[in-house]
Image 1 (cartoon, rainbow, N blue to C red):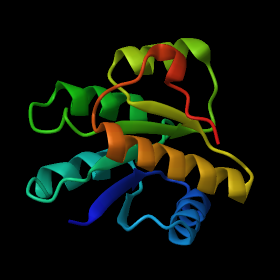
Image 2 (image 1 turned 60 degrees about the horizontal axis):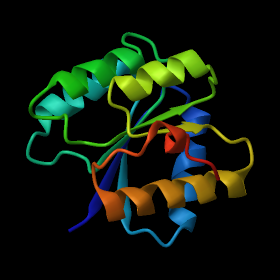
Image 3 (image 1 turned 30 degrees about the horizontal axis):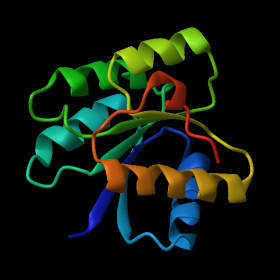
Length: 145
């Protein structure tokens, strides 16, 4: 069965960077992208039979923020089982604590270095494949390259 990743990010360059990194890894996965929170929720609602195995979610998006989407996903009986990885440039400990409290699986600060991006994507996906939706302790919430 193909492992499906859904990336919700409004920055085209970040989406291409993520896709390029994923293609260089030995992970067999398909990547789907949406550009804002409204598109994310529409995608989930329109693809209930083909839900992603993990969602990488940017926080700062137009129409509906990543934080709003996280709450909506985790409050939904249909979607709460999907691991949500926050994928953002932001680094605010209070915000991170709130995101963890609201059900995010991991937090990744978008790395500027391509090899770091490949490393952190690889570690995150490998961990999710091994542990499923089992959430880490708060100390292990931020995924490092």
